[in-house]
Each structure stands twice: as structure tokens, then as C-alpha cells.
Image (cartoon, rainbow, N blue to C red):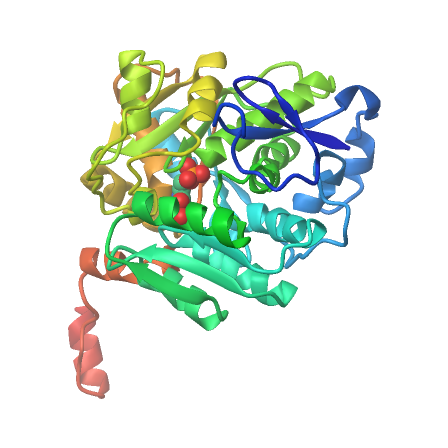
Length: 401
Ligand code: AN7
């Protein structure tokens, strides 16, 4: 049992209302459970496999879920990078190990299930890539059509490939992500498609399970969660989940929520660093990390609350720092992630160097998407393969043996 509640005016709406923002004041909505009526389900959870659906008592889905076995992703100890930075307890939660290769699957298994629960039969989103790949996949599983709007020329090739192959109707907008989102939002309101961007409060319910899993894997609450921030949905979701665990008495502390953006696309960082009450959108965001090339994050107000209420922080990293950390994760830890994902760990490096965070902290970085999402950016950074004639002498010579 849950209500939809406005984060600003606290107006409550019925479960079956299909709304994405508060009809009274226009602010974001959140899913609120009657936590007083829920027995803390800790013991029950421990008996189920690690996955989004381990935590179903804190999810809104009542129909049989549309699932491809999302979640249950590995939490890696970053031994080498941690040692270099002088942090003993540095971890990466590898969300690239989800079915479509990003954390979006946690949100889509819940979001597409809710589309069916609410009787909607066409789903839609705008996307910098991963949301569209995930929505296409889950719509295929649910046997319903999906419409996805992408900023033309700015989506990594692996993500477009997934959206196309899973059968979504893919539309390229001559404009940026923020424009595509405004368009699809209007389309959904006027034509009854079900919007599955992170303005949809149910999608974030699935994504909050990243935090639940990390706590279960560590058997403790980390001191800090570090996430790359684009639309700021994920950082808001993880924070919301942890508040629920605290309200249920299942944890007694909250981690410092820390958001990392790319320097060319950093409105949340600016709002935190300058103490602004709200973000000032960025008109022309630009970064190699196209996943987080977002100038007007729709969940900014939730994210600012998450960061401020937990004593967290936010910082921006350059494209060079992002790519250097992508290579370090790949070569020193064996963890292949896309550029946006490397931003979280690059942000920890920068915060350590600035003396803004403590080396004794237990830190979980969320690395959000798989290396293969954006092969072009990988190839551009690496030496090309050495091509030789098909004989042993050439091979030995090429290897310098
Ligand atoms: C790899 O796919 O916004 O701050 O449309 O793909 O919750 O938006 C992707 C975002 C981080 C940022 N890492 O998460 C989209 C989209 C990766 C991402 C983010 C995204 P939010």
C-alpha cells in the first residue's frame, strides 16, 4: 500500500492517478508507504537471492513483475585504486552487470510492471541512451510497444543498437536530451503513453535497491555513496531507500550522498558548491560522458535534499579525469565501465586530493554502465591492434620476444 505524495506541498494522490508531477504545484512526486504497518523484513530478505525483487515489500508492484533478473550485481573491492588513493575500504557496485548493461534495468523492471498494473499499453522515454536500451528490452519482455526519443548524434552506439534490436520505435531529435524529455513528457500527457523517465516515481523505486544490495553485501552501512549524476534520479532513489530502512529501524545511520558530474555539464555541483536553493539549468551541456550530458536534471530538487540532508557533497571532474579513471578501472581492477560510470571513482580521487573526504571512510562508488555501451570512446583511447602477416616469425617479432 502506498500513496503518491508531492515532495513540496505534500498533497497526496490516489494510487491509480497517472500523473508524473504534482497537479497542484508542479513539483515531483514520491511513493510513500505506510511504513508503520510493515514488519521490518530483514530476515525474510536474507533468505531470497540478491536482486531487485528481494526487497518487494518496499516496492509498489502488485502484478506479476516483468523481470529479466535484474540486480544482484557484484560489489568489487577496489584494491589497487584504493591503495593508490590511500583508501582501504573503496568499493565499486558494478551496475553494468545488469541485463541491458546499466542500472536502468532496476527501474524498468518496476516501471514496466507498473505500466501493466496501471493498464497502460505503450511506454515511452527520452534518453541519453541507457534508459532507451533498458526500456526497449523490458517492453519486449512485456510484449508492449516502446517509443524512445534520442538526441541525434549524441548517443553511444551500443545503446542505440540495443534500442533498435529490442524493437523500440527509435526517434532521433535534432536537439539535446533536455528538449527530447520535454517533448516526450508532453506526448505522454496528451496521447496516453506511459512515461518511464526518472520523473516517473515508480522507476526510482526499483533503483533504490542499489543501496539495499550494497548494505547487504557489505553487512554495514557505508560512510559514503558516490554516484554519477545526470538527471539526478539515481542518487535521489538510493537516498529515499535508505531513509525507509532507517524509518523501519533496519539501519541506524545514513551514508553521505555524494554526486559527481562532468565539468561541462554540472548544474547540481554548482548548486551545492554555491549554496543555491535550486539548480540553474545549463543550456549547452557537453562531455565525453554522453550518458550524463544533461543540463536540466529533472530530479534536482530531490538530489539537493539527499546531498544536503546527509552532509554529502558534489564535485565535477574533467573529461580527461573521467577517461583516465575508465582506463584505470579497466586495467588495474578488471572492471569495464562506460565513461559516465568512471566519473564516480574519478570524483573520489578528486575529493581525496582536495582533502574534502576522509581516507578512513568506507566508500561505495556506483559504476552505472558497461564498457561495451560506448565502444567508440574506448577505441579512441587505445592503441589499435597490431596487424601482422600470418606467420610465427612475424608474431614473435611483433611481440618483441
Ligand atoms: C551510465 O539513459 O539519463 O542521475 O537517459 O546512463 O539517475 O540520471 C542516463 C543516465 C549515470 C545518470 N550513469 O543517472 C538516460 C540517462 C549512466 C547513465 C547516469 C546515466 P541519473
